[in-house]
Image (cartoon, rainbow, N blue to C red; front, side):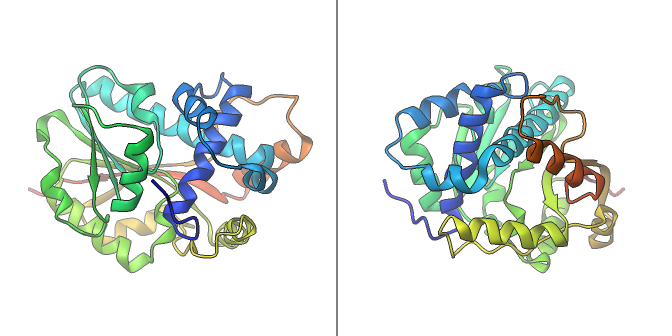
Length: 273
């Protein structure tokens, strides 16, 4: 199965590389055994990606995965039979790390991305793929869940690629369809988004421009009375650090958090009586 590397879908190889290489060196942050195994058997030259993203890039990917894992674990501790929907799943391997034996998981992505994913990560009875666009609301019907068991939507490095008006409309639709559900995702500031676009272009991918940014998460509450911001946390906050990391990596992490260049946003779709 081939993948168009000049596309948004093509970017799924970057976090896979990041999680595999950085988790081998930093298992105290993330131990992504599945990503490591996939990379070992994957016939692709990651030299350009490694050169472009470097140590800091790899660490940013394992931190993102760790923050999402922690959020899922906290959610399923309260809702052991919860439904998790991974928006823009790509080659994400979170299920293998957080599965409690009772949760139900859906991987949502475009048809070619899902076909590529399934060639490397097969579906299982509680880990099912949905080959549709995020904006095709028919996927709502593909998600079988019990409202009382809870539903959590996660999205890693995906919303950047969409226009704000597109996301506003989808968040409104989700709030109506999944009252009580929660959404956890990462976002960048407007300034950081410009830097990220230049970085991705350096890998040779000219077809994955990013548009969406979040400077003040509270603005999202203006999108709908049903949207409540539960938290917004600096990207690297609370993560262990290593004195052996390059000085540039440590400095960048401090700058990112100090100026709120990257963050995690946690929303809830409120029930309206």
